Length: 111
Image (cartoon, rainbow, N blue to C red; front, side, top):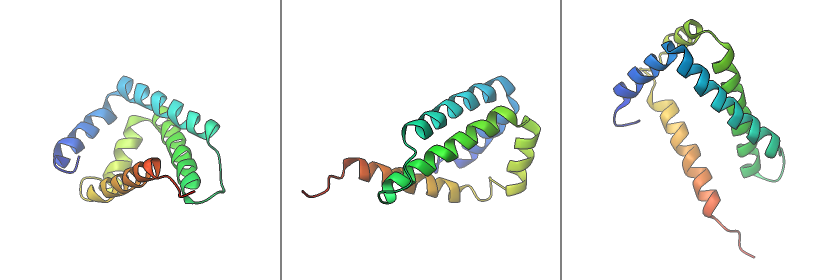
C-alpha cells in the first residue's frame, strides 16, 4: 500500500462505485467485526485486550457503514477528508497496529 499508494487510491475509488462488491465487502467486514465483538468484548486486563476489543468495535462499525451508506455518501466522505493527500497517516496507523498485535501474539510473559 505504501509503495503504490496512487494505485491503491484508484482501486478504492472504483470499489466505492461498485455497489455489489461494496455490499459483499461490507457483509464480510460486518461478520468479522461481529465475531470479534461477540468473542472478545473485554474492557480490562491491560492494553492488549482493550486494543483487540476496540479493533472489533471499529470493524463492526465499519461493516455497518459499508452495508448501509450509499456509495455517493462514501465517495463524498473520502473526498472531504482528502484520503489521497493524507494517505500515509492511516497506512502508518494500520502498520503500527499490525506490528503491535503481531508482537503481542508472539510474546510470552515470563513465568
